[in-house]
Length: 618
Image (cartoon, rainbow, N blue to C red; front, side):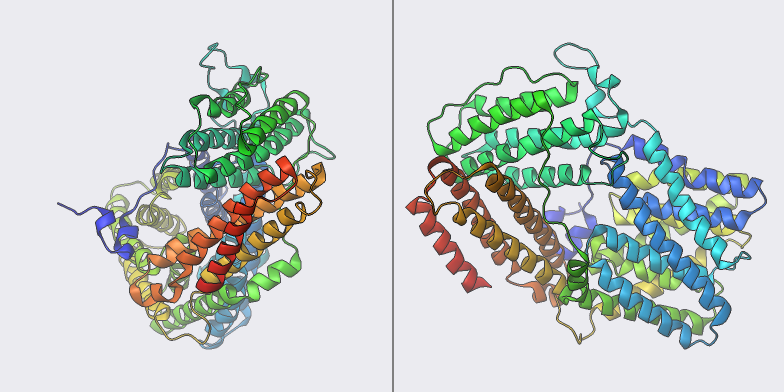
């Protein structure tokens, strides 16, 4: 009997953990229509190599094709693809003009240093850095007859095809499901291009209701974290590039107003959870009705009013009234959190996390290219490409990544070896690429499964491109890359270890203190805060909780490393917990300041105690 993951060491338990959730059928359909048809078009047109490059672009973009708004998908898929186009051009240029087995690894190391540092900025930058390096290795090592500028055009063209599918194809959405009250699908007449945004805003209201239900119970902490995640998702869904000029359509304005209305509801629910006094069952009924109104596309109707027996309940009642007005008018504009400027991006890239990741990527990318060149392997570019994916901290702890990558590669390569002996060429291989493209959205739930699917897809692309079956070489290169990344990951470092965690904690600390200062500034005059002060407060509160969630994610990944690596982030959990208590207390203070214009003594004493605790644990 296999022991449960919870009873295993963290580094092994993470490797066995699988994400759960419904199958994203819309992503499956797009995956089936992306790489396979592009490869087929290249075969039919007699430009197989360009079809392979376009299919690779679509495959890499498919990793970033996640649930959410269509407009956000343009940035999430498009910007990394543009970085990949630059990498393809760079790789093709050095393949044509740079000779010597020493200069190419050196150039790869320099490129890895820059790409790794900027990958610390955020998820989109991380995906862009990955595609830049992967495309550079492919452009330098894959035997392609076309000039570099054509490769640099067709690589993002594959991603552009997937973006077009994302924008044009209707996607199944809960907002189009029949109403449980009427049986009608009133949402079906609404623009399906906003399905992802509508679902995200609706989920935020449902998370508020769930938190209100859990007030006074042990589930409240987890529900508050779930509310943060739902609000983050809704904020992202509404922050994509506009596809219409000026203020957008009426449906867009209504969604923005509904998102704005959920912010004071979340604030009141968090303050009530901080107080810890159980609420009547009907407390969560109002947010649930608002969520149903978004789902069905109907007015929210009368909302049940909670008893106004305390500051938190009065804030909840006021927030429900504000939401009812916003649902009717649909004209409010939401405050978004502080946007990162160029200086913020450079500061993050040059910070401890950027320096640590940049050095690690530079060593892995350059060393793997040098080893591959020394071995004179015909597919030498596989080694640095594999190292790029293995070194990414986004995909889990180091040992977990290595174990899953090795297992997935062996399974995928053995499976493809059997397929290659049976399938007709090239039609059968094109079909394999299409099927693997459809499986990627499901396989991303576990790194080993994703690796197995991608291994089959890449080996099929290589064979369609005219090269012999290479399953054995794929296994050998992957195991060698695993060894290089493990060795580099455990070397003594000239930079601070645990920099990624420290970066996230530093950002969370700054945002928490900015939020606290703003709330306390409204308690000096003894009058309730004005509308502009509250709007700025909600934006600061979003920043505080969002950066805390990012810090928590980094801490959890660091804790699942081997003990020799996990020790560099020791104590960060206590700092994050203290910051969370500080932000929760600040939220409770904000509600009381709104109610009375003054800060209660109990809250002030709690703030002082938490600030002292942070000084101790920092």
